[in-house]
Length: 592
Image (tube, rainbow, N blue to C red; front, side):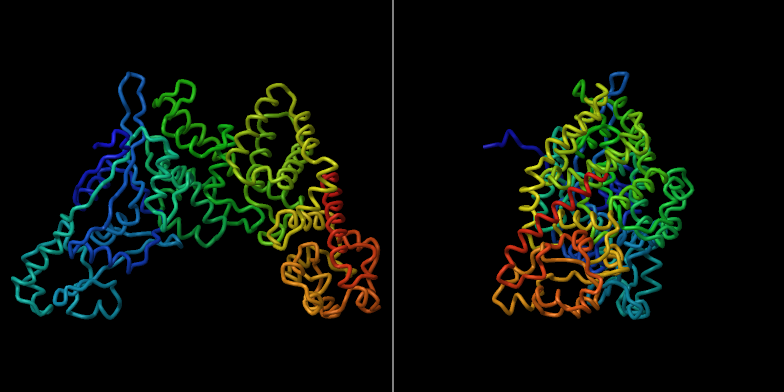
C-alpha cells in the first residue's frame, strides 16, 4: 500500500555527478570558507568505504518553494544540502584537491595517500610522503592534466608494481567518482520546522540542526541578493570578536570579502575584548529578525528570505528582494560599532562584569539589545529613557523567567506588544503596566525568596544578586578596601557563610550546605581566618571582624543575628538571608 503523505522522493546518482552539480551551482553547499569539522582520518575512512564499494549514506536536499516573478514566471530556487555537507566537502577535498578551512580560518589541503600494493588509504604524513611505495595524493588522478599512460611508465617501478597492475588500480581509484550515492529530495512544500525535524530525526546521535543553522545555509546559497555576503559578515564578526587573531587569517583566506564593504563594517570587532555580550550567530539572527522584522521565530526569517509574502501567503521574487534589503540594513544597524559598544556599556552599568559569574542567560541580553535598538530607532525617547527602560526590562524579564521555556514565543509576543503600543504612543504606559503586573509585593516578598532556594551558582537570581552588589559598588564582606566586583574579576572565593566543613561535621549534606543563600564573596585571607568555625565563633574574632559593619552586612544581605548563630539555626539563617537578598535585588531594580 503506497503512502500518499510521502514527503520526499529518492534518487540515485554518482559521486562525480553530485560534485559536478555543486560546481555548476545547481545544488547549494555552504561555502568552502566555513570551517570543516571532520578529522582527516574521517576523510580517509570515507574514501576507503567508497573504494571498497560500501554505502556512505544518503544526501538529503530540500528546495524551498519557487518564488513568483513579476512577469508570472517562476524564479528557480536551487536545492540546499540539508544533510551531507561534511561528506561532500570531504569528497571535494580528497578527490579534487579543494582546500578546506580549519577552525582557525586557515586554508589548507587534506592529503589522502594510497598504497597500491596493500590497497590501503592513509592521511599523508611526512614519512608517507617520502615513502616510494605510497601515492601521496589521490587527487592527482582527477586533475584535467593527469596523463594515465605517462604516470604508469614513470611510477610503476618505484611503486613496485607491473604496469598493468598499476593501471588497474588507477582505474579502480578513478572509479570512486562513479560510486553510487543516494539523494533524498524533501518536498518543497514542507515547512521549515518540519525540514529541521526530519534532519534531527536522521541525526539523532549526531549533529543537531537548528533554525539558525538552516538560516545560515539559506543565506549562504544566495548570491543574487548578497545573502552569502551577509552570512559571512555575521559569521566573521563572531569569529574576530571572540579572537582577534582570526582577523588576519580570514583576510588571507577570503581576500575578496576582506576588501568588501561588508568586512569593513565589522573590522572594528578585532579590537574589542569583552565577554559581557558575546552573541553567537543564532543570537545575532534573532536580534536582526526582532529589530528588522518585529518577529521572534527564526523559521519566519527563513521564510522571508525565501520570498514569503505573509500577507498574500505566496512566495515572490519581489518579496524576497525586499526581505534581503531589509535584512542587509538591519545587520549593518545591529553590528554598528557605536550601537554595539553603547549596549555593552549599558550592560556594564547594570552590573554585568564577566561571562561566567555575573552574566544573564543570552535570551535576556539578546532581547535587551533588540529593545535598546528599537527604542533608539522607532521612538523619541532620550538616551536616559532608553537606558532606563532597557535595563528595567532586562532585569524584570530575567527575574520572572519571561523568556525561559520558549524564548522565540516570548520574543514574538513582546515584539507585537511593542509595535502595537508604540503606534498608540503608549509605550511608557505598557512598560509600567508590565513591570507593575509582574514585580508585585508578593513577588518580592514570597516568590523571589522561594526562587533563591537552590544550589547552583548558575542560578539567574543568584547572578542578579551579584549584579546588584556590583551596581551598588558594594564592598566584599568583612573588607574595607576590596569591592565585590574586584573579588569576582580576580576569581576570588565564594565562601560558605556557614563553613562547609563545619556543617558537614554536624551532619549536613551537600544539597544543604551548598545553598546559594549560604554563599558570599570574600578574600582568600578572610576565608582562611574563618576556617571551619561556626558564625557565632568567628564573628567574635576581632581580627576576622576588624572591618565589619552593619552597612557591610546589608550590602551582602547578612542577617543581623549572624553572630549568635550555629548549625541549630542554619535553616532560620537561610530563610532570613533569602529575604534580604530579595530586598537588595528590589532596591537594585528601583534604582535603575
